[in-house]
Structure formats: structure tokens, C-alpha cells
Image 1 (cartoon, helix red, strand yellow):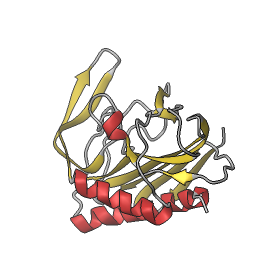
Image 2 (image 1 turned 30 degrees about the vertical axis):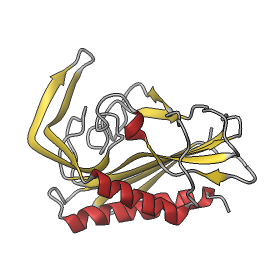
Image 3 (image 1 turned 135 degrees about the horizontal axis):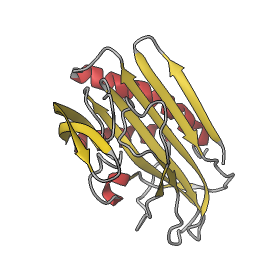
Image 4 (image 1 turned 90 degrees about the vertical axis):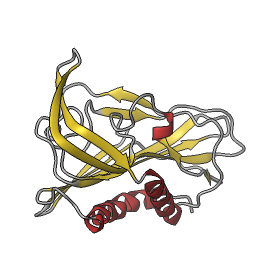
Length: 231
């Protein structure tokens, strides 16, 4: 498995782009309509980092003891603008990929928990624990198909994602998993592109600032997706 980690420094923002996996060379590859992971996870999409929308934190934070350690999270967490953000990310993907019809009965990727901690755990804009996504085979398809999974596409004000120690400033995240399936549904290859952007100075962003955060990530993530796009 090929894993690349690119850290992009900026005076007012902390940026990260993580790319995992390797794509196969496949002829006559169709592209399906995007599939939203939030529609296929058990429990709260916010806790699974599968939210699509704008996240608003409020009320300070509370500490929850669930038997596996103590976990901070904002007292109030509201995800709004879901339909608008779904349209927004679909339009963005359509500019990168020749999107086609939806696939029937898509099988969500397996989430494997990563043990231990990383240097970003206290202030990253994702809930803990960290996980790695592994694509899973699905049913037969009319032809080899690329399935784009929208794992997460959200903006947020300052607050605490689940499990954080220090909390995070305003930011955004764009996480897309591209999975190549053969006609028999087997996994031929995949690319997991996860981009995050956190402001060190903005805590209560305006609507325009939220979109600025997403636009910056779309450019970075889009460049990596563009390299994998069928020609």
C-alpha cells in the first residue's frame, strides 16, 4: 500500500493532506454517482467523521467517561445545511469526474481503528478514535466501475470534536474515497484522499469564511483526485 503524507504550512492555518492506497490501471472504467458514507454508518455521522454539512459547536465542552478513557466533546453539536452541502460536493466532484448513474447496494468500507495517538489528536478537526478505511467487495457490476465515496465534507466553528483534549479553531474537512471495482465486484484499487484545514485565528467564521475554507481544500484534494480520474 502506498501512503503519502503532505503537510502544508501557512501563517494562519494548519493544513494536512493524507493520501492512502494505490489505483490500478483499468480500461473502460465507468464512474458512479457519489455515495455518502453518512447514509451507511451506524450511529451519529459526526462521531464517525462522516458528516456532510456545517457543524456548529456551542455550550463549552463536557467530559464523557465510556469505560475506555475520558472523552471531551462540545456540549452542543448541530449539523445543518446538509442538502446544500450534498449538492455542493456533488457539483465539485462532477467537475473532476464523469459521474454516472448510482450503483445498487453499495458496500461501505471497513473502518479499522488505529491504536495509540498522533500529534494532531488534541486539536484536529475529526473525532477520535482515528481509523483507516479499507474498501470492501460488492455485487457484480455491468462493467468495471469507480465508486466515489464522500466520507466527510464539512465546515465548522471553534469547538471540540469527540475525544479532543484542547479543541480546535474554525475549519473544514474534505474526505473522499475512490474505489475501483471489477465486473465481479472485487476491489481492484483505491485512493483515500483526506484534507483538513484549521484556522489558528478564526473561531466564529462568517458564511464567506466557511466557504473559503472549503474552497481551499477542494483545490488540494481535487488535484489528487484529478490524477486518478478516468480519461
